Image 1: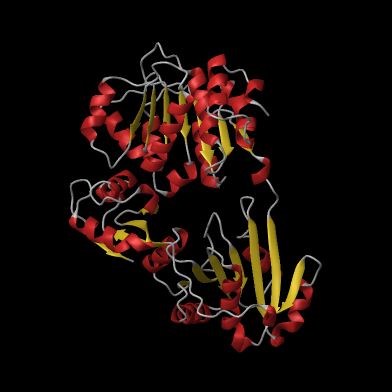
Image 2 (image 1 turned 120 degrees about the vertical axis):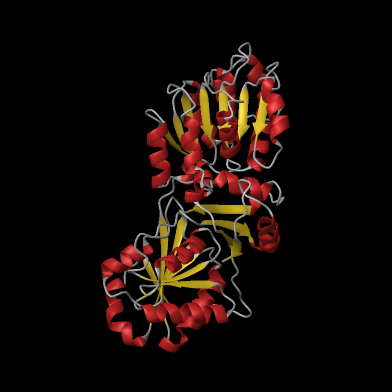
Length: 453
């Protein structure tokens, strides 16, 4: 579908042609007609899908350059993304004269931003913490805001920006166009849409709408060889994250310890853990600081992981309903899922009820043997002895890490803030550097104890 099919100015169409935008991507074709019509839109869109041009063309089409005031605000989770979005918007605005686009991000000096704001801007692109700081200091006004964009909204929620986003909205007028772009449609995202948007049009591109597909495989092997087969499965299929279900808490603990000895990073969750220990385990699994979680069914209740690559039943579950519930944790949000079940000759009688055309029953010996296989986490978690009760926010932590500590926003994962503690996922190779710098530095002009989990 060509851009010329849309109600765009000659200048915009000419510019799009010049910069090589010949045909619309799926997310552009499905969302732009609604965006240009002034509707609120919630769109499922990943990096590289063309989403920036979708909302960029929309907000530029509504812009009144003669009115020198902030008319559009784009909130992004990281400074890198904000810089990338601002660069794209400037490219799209080449044929529109005197458009001023300003970035406001943490990790950059406040003073120069203040100077730029005094000269005014049409479009602000920024991170929630820094934008909110300017709003509170009354150096930024959203009184005339026409379009609000939340880009990579799921990532912003992961990084703990929910409070900052809510507070930022209190500075906006109620009637505005709100565009929400997210890589996943979680319950939390849908709730944000419900709170922020009015009769939002939901856009899911065809490529991301494929039906959930869970590939189910059953492997028979001797009970004493199950651990070896489990590692072979990891080696052959290389999942990003896995829940291994066991029927007993003793088993959960033993399997996790055995995997650790084999240089496969795993944690166990079971009924004997104290609440703080449970929190530590769940935070690390959810923020990708640990790729394998070994769990009993009771301990896994309430655990919500957005994208789970694989589920393994180390033993046959006691009930068919339990099996369905376990494997239903993978293959969500349009992703393909993998579900494996190990069973020994002692369980052969109970496995018959699972046999059907949809499930593959294979000999474990068919798996390629794992030699020197290891599984290490993408991130490692830093614990900060300060939280909500200390008025610590995600923006404060992100600012300290990207400012004085000098980390890139892309090296920082999920941020979880509790009453007295905060957990931050840091790229594994940078953990020691981040720990050292944050221990020496300050957050909100205060010293907090920082340690590696």
